[in-house]
Image (cartoon, rainbow, N blue to C red; front, side, top):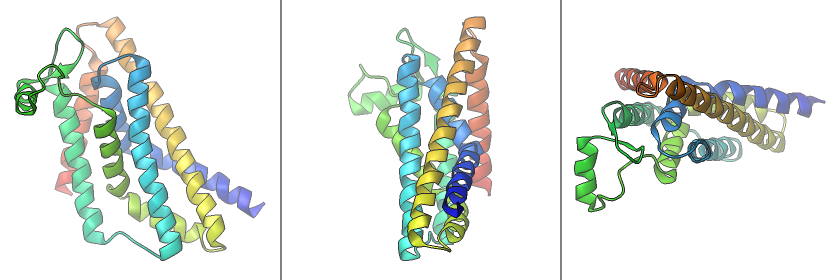
Amino acid sequence: MELIGLLALSILLGLRHGIDLDHVAALADITGGSSGSKKERMKLSLWYAGGHEAVVFVLGCSILLFAWTVPIWADHWMGKAVGITLIFMAILILIGRRNGSGVYWSRGIAIFQKLRRRNDEPFTFTRRNVFTVGVIHGIGAETPTQLLLFTTVAGAAAANHGMLAVAAFSIGLLLSHTLIAIVSLWFHDLAKKIRPLLPVTMYAACLFSFVLGVSYLLE
């Protein structure tokens, strides 16, 4: 019964951690700013979640098995890295324009494309870059601090129980991220149907992401 209670609590904590503002902002950007169908944008959201949850699981297991921790200075600078990713994602959409294929891109991104010599593929969110953002968000923005407190309590009784708790925590995170992505997709697409020329939710998500990113840089 104690193990069941621990796993249930771990899932609830994962659900709670999944709605941290940096996660919400990133998923809102991905679902609102990337091209493609709902299915494609949902897949991108899950790639972000996969990057984040993989790091959380590895960090949690490392804390339990090796008493490993992320140095305070590293946690601090990774928090700023989270801020940079949020600002980048916001700018990518906010100052961009929509071309005929439905991809948002700006003059700056067009120049970047010329440097890459791949003008036929406008820069946008891909599995690789959203997975990378997920990894960064998994390391920074106080995730290690929260995870250290959680795993200390979870592993107090037995290391194997702690490992199960970390897995349950990651499952809770995945459920939370999936729900956020679904809700974001629904709101973005609803706004486009009501006001096709002005997807309000997309610009709101960009502004939120930008302001939040700046706040992380100023901490």
